[in-house]
Image (tube, rainbow, N blue to C red; front, top):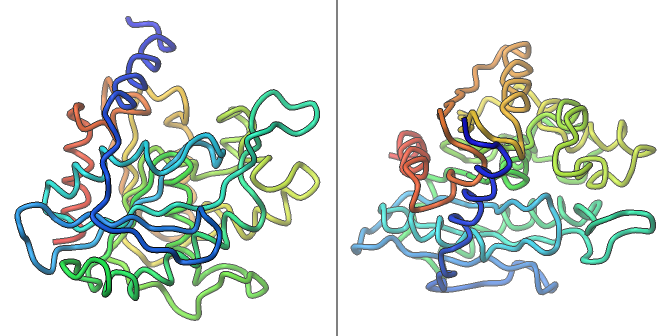
Length: 289
């Protein structure tokens, strides 16, 4: 049996080996340099293609930006989708005092940005990606981006005091979340991404209050078709996190699909060279077409 750490390192190296793919257009949704969306037109001239809105992972930390997701985004464009690749503000590059790595996320800016970007997408698409059909939108995201995709689809069930709450459900065909950090308590229990969830919420003292506004497992049911795609050999965001979210949905009276891929870790889901990436594209297509 392969060493899990060695497998993960090899899969990460493969996913990150592809050169970044430049977008066909870009547009700002705010004044901060990170408040930008890149657009990828569907290859082959398809008109009125379903629109995939993609949110990158990286534990909500600054060293990881949308560029590492561009080979995956280009893969989807070559499959006939129009794609919007969203950037958002993340944690600082310097660790907090006593920490060993970059800070995960900003509160509330990370959530401000995802909400603002999703609200701006229909307007920006009309100007910069006319091939996209804004009536057929699927959200996807990987890891921390999977969390943000689930969260963005649940804004209409946020507590009434949440600034990002929507009056009604967003117009989505569905969500395909890839190895998402989808259940905060389980993720904390497992030490996912070196305590990134607690950092995202601003520390243990803020955890319980802010989790009400940020934890997808507490924002159920959403009424929006949702599928989680998860590698069984994932040691970054383990299968148990996805299963905890699916169980929480079931307890709330909602069915969330769970596609478990054998012999697959965390990174093949966004690696165009991996078979798992084709599975992801098919899951998106089933919602979009």
